[in-house]
Image 1 (cartoon, rainbow, N blue to C red):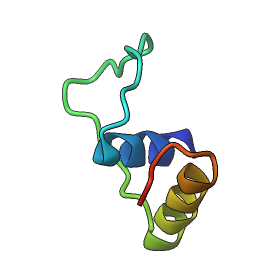
Image 2: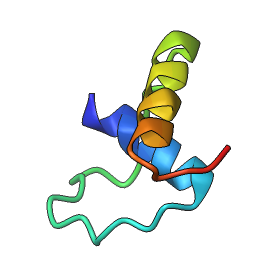
Image 3: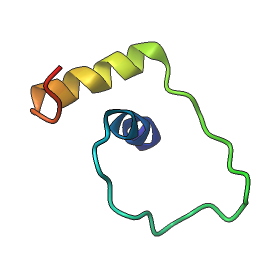
Image 4: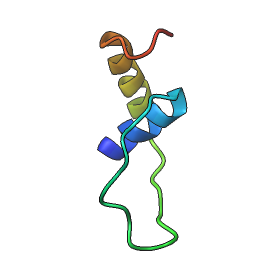
Length: 53
């Protein structure tokens, strides 16, 4: 899910561009990335050289 990828990018300080389809509500609900998916996303970032850890 692209929302999970965006959360992990924010966590590692990877700059994203401005989002043009912003939520209409003032209090959007955010999903929390499950630990197993978080590890898979981090492994992909390492594979593509986006992070060094």
